[in-house]
Image 1: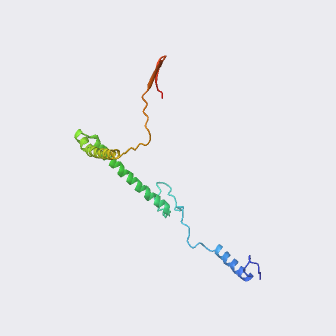
Image 2: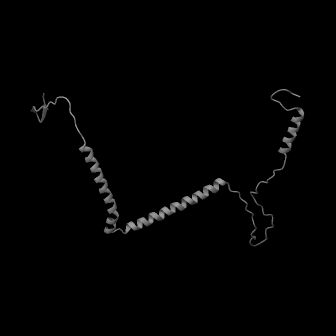
Image 3: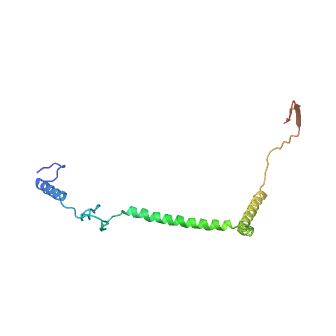
Length: 159
């Protein structure tokens, strides 16, 4: 019997645990693995075509693959719907008349006029309430001297 904390099992317990682990290691698998190949052992005819033989198919598809397949079908159907909608719109636009353009543009033009009117009213309301208060002395200089030299002329305020 050992008192080392790394080996807390007695010899009897350790032997029983070893027997259990060996039994589990050599035990048959409870669920057999699926068959991934098939070999037809029937005799081949000497002449003519070989008759068809049933080949069992028991494939297991992972869940993520099913999810990807369903998602791709959904995306494909959605894109097809968008394509059909675009085709219908473009078919309608290809037969455009002046009356049709005016009928489509009238609501947008009305909305633009309303937006412009609202913007102008807001702008005028803001500018009407502006009050400028100046404090201090105001100096107005009106002396302008011009000197023409060479090709160009320049004006300069002196003061």
